Image (tube, rainbow, N blue to C red; front, side, top):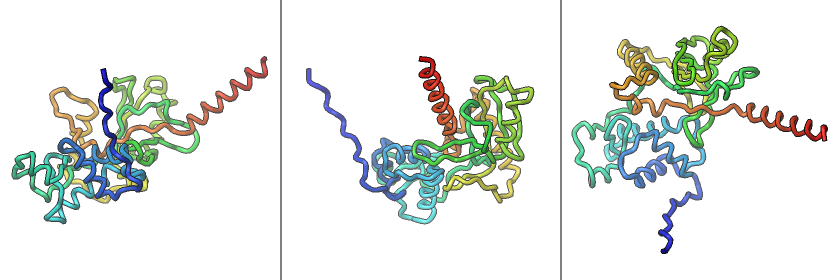
Length: 272
């Protein structure tokens, strides 16, 4: 039996493509519409851009929504909440409805929520020294320090929520307090929902928006659905994709482990 034909791999460009070029390349190669967070992830994972900043999902969303808003001949179509395709591909494959071609639509927001992290590990944080709660949007994205984030948080014992709290000063400060108080031995993971925005440089900033009652209610609903995962609710993943950050392990942990390993080796050699 002969070997199966080897699949052709996408060539990595010799230079970083512009965001516009990279977005169009991803959508051209896609089988259908993609969420803007998925577009950003594919740009980074395929090496179309080696530098994607701290907020690649928001950057892609901004390029798409700006193109649809300001360019009557935009090459993109919004075909669902946060989902986009190329107009040419849609014309060939899809019967586009009235709602779909509303080019003035902006990417849906998650109320007042600007960033969040789910089931981060307690033991992946260094609780002494400079405060750091590191997260990133995906492969290739710059680490963001959420130590100064504000909002609400959950403490988990494995998957069970054992405590709900609020961080009005700093998230790191509140979580650190729970490592030595009555809850110290009862949680191993935490989730958080933040109100401070993340800039492309990775810096946090307060929102100057005046939140309406509708925004507050939408935010409360979104946080509850995401954290409780009620089986009869549709998940808010379409909205949340661009706001979620996965945990990045503090490099000081690897440095400490390496130092500990060298100490053990040294002690072993001394005993021989």
